[in-house]
Amino acid sequence: MIEFTIWDILRNLLLATRWTVVLSLVSFVGGGIVGLGLLFLRISKRAWLRSLAKYYIELFQGTPLLMQLFIAFFGLGLFGIDVPAWLAAGLALILWSAAFLGEIWRGCVEAIAKGQWEASASLGMGRLQQMRYVILPQAMKIAVPPTVGFSVQVIKGTALTSIIGFVELSKAGTVVTNATFQPFTVYGLVALIYFALCWPLSKSSQILERKLNVAHRNH
Amino acid sequence: MSLIEITEVRKSYGANEVLKGINLDVEPGEVIAIIGKSGSGKSTLLRCINGLETISNGSISVAGAQLHDDEVHLKALRLKVGMIFQQFNLFPHLTVGSNVMLSQTVVKKTAKPEAETMARRMLERVGLEQKFDAYPDELSGGQQQRVAIARALAMQPMALLCDEITSALDPELVAEVLAVVRELAAEGMTLLMVTHEMKFARDVCSRVVFMHQGRVHEIGRPEEVFANPQTPELRQFLGVH
Image 1 (cartoon, rainbow over the protein chains, first blue to last red):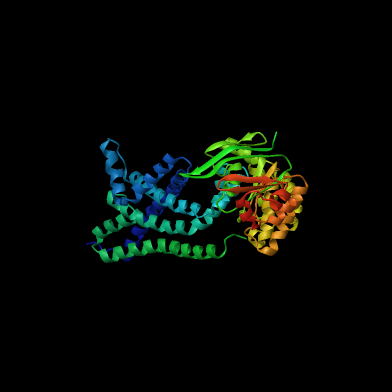
Image 2 (cartoon, rainbow over the protein chains, first blue to last red):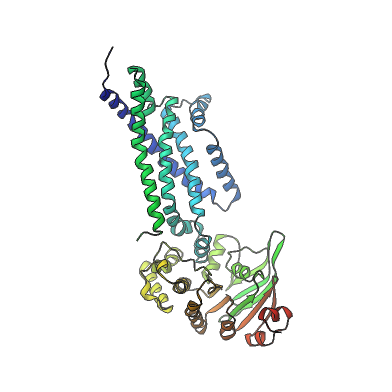
């Protein structure tokens, strides 16, 4: 039997960590873009656009991410579309992140006093101008801590994509375990790597929250 | 032609009718005080004039710009009439100067240098030119309200709506804001103000409108309205018997 050193195990896990990081970034950035679109729909003046975004968010928040991954992976296959695991994983995570980010940001926008909308409207600004120059700059400050906090959920969410065969950190852990028969060591290392990714984010979210609460403006 | 024409304006929230057919024409240069109990519809009327509230019936026009509920019409209307709020509503993330410059550059597409010149001039007019680089939360309430006035003036409106602009101020700060308003009135600015400052209304206004239960209950020159109220409701409101 071949002997595996800790370094052999760790090296393989770290190589797979790249994909966890890439998938997290893609999901977070893509989810952010779609989420911004959802935010605008959610606070639209048209009722049907608001409902549309609301149902989208309820659907994606109300079903397990795992089911969304299965549907993206197997569901599209039923229509003869061959979906590679990385595409299904990226798509499902983007749509899922968007639902949460859109809703987090809606809360931040609605936390801005109504008077800000009224004052900017009475100065003749259109809705997009109000958002861009008055509302979003203020809402963004409130949004930073919960957004950074959510990025931790995204990283942990990528672990589920191992089930549809995307080789990221968790999947690599399974593969390495099958070769080494050292599940405790391998999954222990996997957990440590996740922790090393997530903990700095959680911590910075806390620090940002404290900082932004003290000063309501940046000067 | 009157500057502001309010014709048969009605406004309901569900089954609750808060404006029951308001008619009011305002001539250029007039200073009008709208008084009345809370719930009489005076703030709602003011907010209807620049489209912050929609109206259910009737029409409002300011210098030919009609009130319609779409962005193009609203913008045209709001360029003609500025508004000042009880809570100041300055943009807290911007300096005083940027507060006054923002809508000039964004809405009117004025070039930055001209907008700044205008901002400095308007701040000087309200006596705050030295606060150009300060942030709103470094100012007192009275100063913030004066910045709000400068911000509205920088858009060069034909009329100003003032919604209880001294009600959120400490008593000692009321005077500095009223002094600015008094000066505007003297310069011929058309003003519509919802106010509880009866003495100010008496001294400065050309007409006083007393609103009661969604109607213009009594209207006239301040010396008549205050000295000789015709209706029991106004007498009760003014506390004369």
